[in-house]
Image (cartoon, rainbow, N blue to C red; front, side):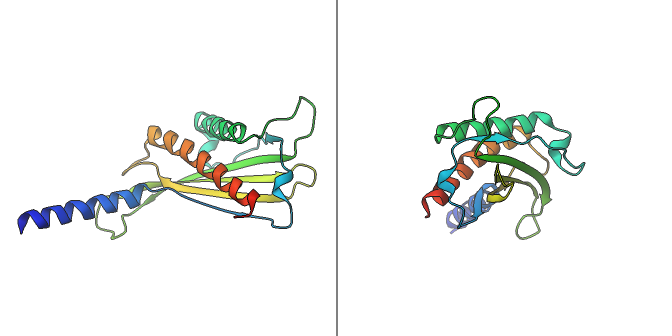
Amino acid sequence: MKIFRALLFLGLATLCCANASAQTVTSTFDENYGLSKLNTYRFVEEEREKSDPLASNTLTERKIVDALDEELLASGYHTPPEGATPDFLIRFHAKAEEKLDERGTGPGYVKGTLIVDFYDAATKRLVWRGVATGAVGGASLDLRLAEDEVKRAAKGLLEQFGRDVLGF
């Protein structure tokens, strides 16, 4: 009986930890736009608010650009020739917030969110938004884990974008 209880506890603990570290990806898009016509892109540099963690961490900002760029290139998208207008512009935002475990009794964790927006370059109209969320630390932010999660988020977001382009 003690072995059964120990195994049950271990299984529940593993399940709780897996839920805390799981990453979710969602998206929404303008169904009347026709995402399939997008081929070339450019990242938009922007002034970040002080509350944006990327305002003071340009290393992470660069890693997000690199991860998204890598996934876009692998998916067949590319930057236009110098001086040419891209089909879409990319902006992104990130945030990190401390969360309590689901029961409110155990140690908390840091939840990171990456929001990526694609805008039609000609009209500046938002045509697609993807949001990835996941744990990026235990009681405090783990920069190594955050970097790994950025790569996973970029991959998941571009997979979701591909499904949105195809309509499923």
